[in-house]
Each structure stands twice: as structure tokens, then as C-alpha cells.
Amino acid sequence: MQTVHTIAELRAQVIAWKRAGERVALVPTMGNLHPGHIRLAERAREWASRVVASIFVNPMQFGPNEDFAAYPRTLPEDSRQLAAAGLDLLFAPGVAEVYPRPLEAMTQVIVPTLPAVLCGASRPTHFLGVTTVVTKLFNMVQPDVALFGEKDWQQLVIIRRMATDLDMPIEIVGIPTVREADGLAMSSRNGYLTAEQRAIAPTLYAVLQATAERWRAGECDYAVLEEQAKTRLAAAGFHPDYLEIRRADDLQRPLLEDIASPLRIFAAAWLGRARLIDNLAIGI
Ligand code: PAF
Image (cartoon, rainbow, N blue to C red; front, side):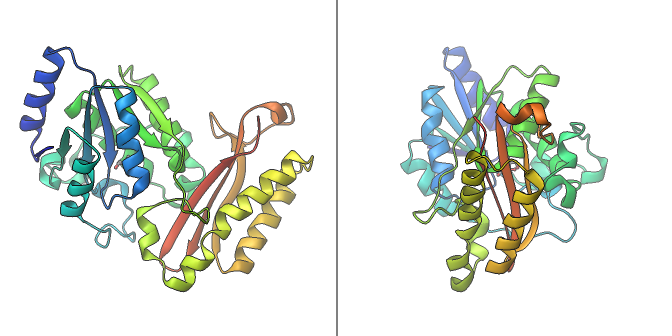
């Protein structure tokens, strides 16, 4: 596996592949890789003959009091895992390569409406940072396809909308969440959990499953289901941020007539230093 740190080196390689008629996949990450990321890298082979992963802890998507400084940076170990997964190229730029001017002086990519709900309600600039950096990564790599994990379902919906609205010729593929044996969705932030919190953490997924089962059994009062699920999370030791049932494709609140359309239940909850998120299909 080749590792490059500059856009010029990256472009030289990707152009050579494209001239040879190869299809290129991109797996964008912030590093501190876990099996969920490796699954994305492996699945990418189904869509392309060359697979590029990027590792960039993107300052633009962290709020002023968030964990940008503390976010784990583990490049040597990440690089070893990606090489073992058979990746072709790792792009690991520094901040000055991606943002040569101060962040506030850089052009930003704004998707309307979708970023205002769920995670965006408590992280108001987060998705602006995501859409800006993903656009830049798409322009740098020029992939045919890009893969994202469904754990970040809102991010996936926003990136799909952005790619459609901006006519980006890139297929956006979502890959199902990879879970620990006890159901906890894999996340780089799980490393923030103490042993005691780690034992509680799978309750998040258990509550989503229990709520989905009740919905399937015919309990269709969203507000009641959401309140009871949040109460259960709080009783387990979480500080719930949100727990909401929304339409899967546009993240709007379901109307009565949406009862048979694809719905998902979304949750974010703090457990100590870790803000855990998860989501689950509850509709058809
Ligand atoms: O999902 C992530 O890890 C990040 O939001 C992404 C897509 C790599 C952009 O920084």
C-alpha cells in the first residue's frame, strides 16, 4: 500500500489508474480505525478495482468545545490495518494541505435543512464541516464511488443530497453498521468509555431494538415511544441528547400517511465523555 500526504502525489496516482481504465473507490475516515472502517475498505472492492482511504481529523467539523484535540490519532496502526485489508493507497494529508488558509477564510459547502435536525441540533456547525471536507476529498481523489457507514445515517443522507444537488458524478454507498458482539455500534469514540460505562453502552442499541419491536407490534404513538425510550436510557445512566423516529430518506418527522414508508429511529446519548449515536430501521 502506497501512503501519500500531498494532493499532487495523490492526483498523480489516481490519474494513472484512470488512464488505465480502472475504477476508484474512496473510503473517507478520520482514522483510529476499527472493524467498521475495515469493512468499508473491504466492501469497496465490490465497486472498484482500486481503493483509496483517507485519514484526516477534520477541524472544521468539530465545535469549539468538542474533542478535536483529544481525538485519537493512530496513523501507524491504522496504516498497518489498511495494508492488511489490501488497500491500494492511503491519503493522509496534514491540516495545511486541506485548509491552506484559516478555516473561516475557506469556502464552505452548505446543504440546507437536513443538517438542522438530530445531531445538527446540538452540533450546529458539524455537518457544514463534513460537507466541506467531503467535497474537497471528492475533488482531490475524484473517485467513482465513495463508501460511508450507516451508523452515521444523517451524514449519509446529507452527503447523498449534496452529491445529487451539486451533480457530483460519484456513487454514494452506505454500508450497514458493524457491531460488537453485545450490539454496541463500533465507533472510534467507544475508546472514551470506562469499563463501567462500556458495560452500560449496549443498552443504547437494546433500547432502539425494543422500541422498533413495539412499533412493529402496533404501538404507533411516536411521542410515547420516544419518551419511554429516553426514560429507559436515562435510567441506565445515559444523558440522552435525542431519540426520534424520522423518515429514513429525508429525516423529516413521519406524517400519518408515512406509516408504511421507510422509517428509522435515531438516538444520541452521552455516557461520560463519549457521545454515542446509533440508528435502526423500524419501518418496512
Ligand atoms: O464519518 C467520518 O469519519 C467523517 O465525518 C468523514 C466522513 C471522514 C469526514 O471527515
